[in-house]
Amino acid sequence: MQVGEYIVPYLKNAWYAASWEQDLGAAPVAVTMLDEPIVLFRDTGGKVNALQDTCPHRFAPLSRGQVRGDVIVCGYHGLEFAGNGLCVRNPHGKGVIPNALHIRTYPVAHHCGMIWVWMGRPDRADPALLPSFPDLAGDRFTWVHGQLDVAANYELIIDNLLDLSHVEFLHPFLASPGNSERTRYRAEQRGDQVSAYYDVENEPISGLFQLLWTGDAQVANLIAYMHWQAPTNLSLDNGMSTSAVVGEDDPRVQVIHLLTPQSEGKTRYFWAAGRNCAHGNDQISQMLRFGTQNAFENEDEPMIQAVRSRMHSNDLFAHKPALIATDEAGVRARRVLARLIAEEQAGELEARRARDVLEA
Ligand code: FES
Ligand SMILES: [Fe+2]
Image 1 (cartoon, helix red, strand yellow):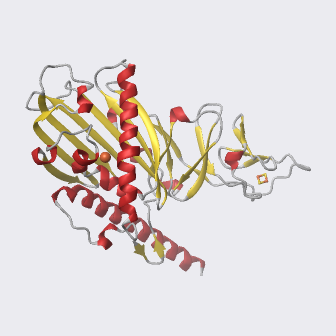
Image 2: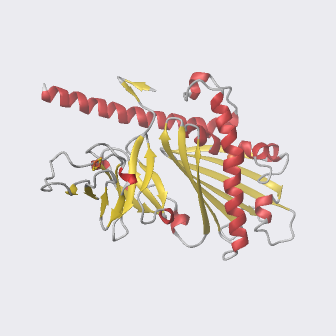
Image 3: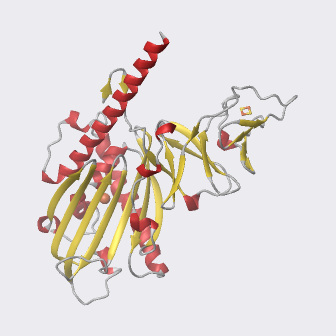
């Protein structure tokens, strides 16, 4: 999409997932988010700092350095930077610290076991804008986590997740043959959130739910409800029940999907899968971890990449896709995202013009 002189592939004023808390230890970690190289490191209190991963001296990646106490030491000539981006020690000569020795910092939030980085204007960073995953923060579910890198644009992954009609064909472990014909589908948009609802009656117990199923019934009612929160976070609520309505106490599996664009053609995909039963069963945890990672890595990812290979750009609508009913949620999400990005860019353009007028 183009607005004025801008090419805009991302919504900048948003929180993006950077690392599972448990995966960030004492060493600095390099991440790329929205084309920007960022280094994450913990201070002695456990708080995470996010700095531009480029030393202002000779541009060494700070992630090649070391964390010492509350500072990160550049691995090239040893300048030291605090979490607020200011150089606090120059080990050379008289130790003079020029004003230019500071680095851009990014607002960080700790939320639901994930470290989030705000990629837009720092004065707009608002914890109230963090995505909401009540069960990921609570203890009703037992969770396993993972991540993978996908060589495709993040919007193709949102398309994939908001259209679960692919499950029968791409994930045989997760749906029985003929599932699509039996499924009632409904898409819904509330403000900037989009949901896709799949309901099936008298469905054979899928491979996934056989792991959690304790009754004798061979069929049950199935729900799969996918919710998208702009720009890139989704949650899937999955459940089976012999009752007419799948309730809170029936076996449920939730899958959280957090997508962080690394560049226009690469996405870091964090996932968490939680169950509300079989707590403390390590074997089921391992099977869920393996099964979820395997489905995304070996079934979705190759298909999404193959789809991208047949497109000449990431602009889906420019390709005039032949849309069917189950595309509704994905199409709605693309439209919401395009509007949010256009509004953000128009605001930036206006602010820049106002600045130019003031400075002229
Ligand atoms: S490049 Fe970092 S101290 Fe020289
Ligand atoms: Fe899938």
